[in-house]
Image (tube, rainbow, N blue to C red):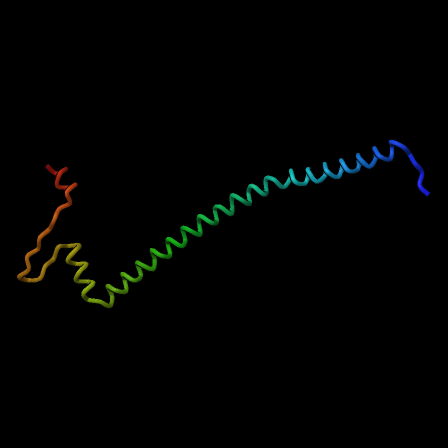
Length: 106
């Protein structure tokens, strides 16, 4: 048996619905800063992962260069020739200057 309270029944249902919506909005509003912080942290993690991959590649190249210098005498010879301009007896070394450096030296 249901008693018709008229407008008060409908108004109380609307108020309950509005209170529920207000509660949901309050929860969403309280979590917005955490969501923004989470997005910033994710972007930071992604950029750090990219940097880690670049550093790993650099480390691999450096390790390969070190291994070549430890095991291959031709690599050591090439490094000494390029870096210090050494030559074998009887060889003539010809060095070419960059066009930019030769123009600025004048």
